[in-house]
Amino acid sequence: MTDPLANQNALFNQYESEYCSKSTDISRKVQALGSFSADVRRLRTKEIEAELKEADQILRRMDMEARSFSQEKSQQLMRKVKEYKADLKKITEDSRQAQGAASGGAAARAELGLADNFYDTSAGQRERMLKTTEKLDKTSDRISQGRAQLAETEELGVSILQDLHRQRETITHAQDTLHGADDNIAKARRVLASMSRRIMTNKLIMWGICLLLVGSICLVLYYKIIK
Image (cartoon, rainbow, N blue to C red):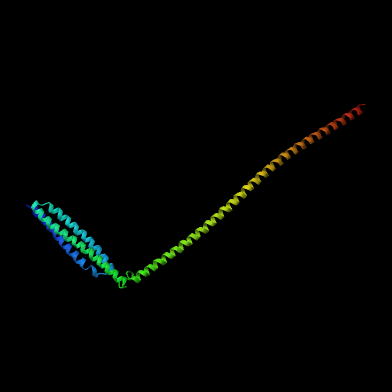
């Protein structure tokens, strides 16, 4: 039958072995950090930070495992975990110091124009600033051109609105003129209708007079023939 205590010891020892291997590897990378170029150093720094997190996770698992033992055994293992935590804290501080020293050295080399990357040197930084200034000037020119075009467009819009207003006034005046013409046409129609009625009346009167004359002539002739 498998001994649970032996399994716990084996698991704790496995975590301990993983941490020792991981911390040794991290220490070696921290010591070599200053010998790399700026780009490689940034990559190495990220790797170290990731491995420090992994080492911290291993210590957390060791801490949980140590608490699962009996009180006497747990205290013994917890002291060991505490020592490993102090060791990891020191490695973390060494990593930060190495990064700061490497950055300071890179800055000093940049001031002297000896940086690994041209754009980290003073000349490179000046060139980059000049390029940035040129880009800003070009952007400013484009903005000025855009504002000028916007002003021209605004003036054109105002001119178009004024033309539309004048056209509207012309159309309104034409409508008023048409209304006046309609009124005159209506008056002319009424006059023509009145004249037409008068002409018809005069015609009727003339026909009546003609009929009376013809009747009178007929009567005169009738009386003369009979007598």
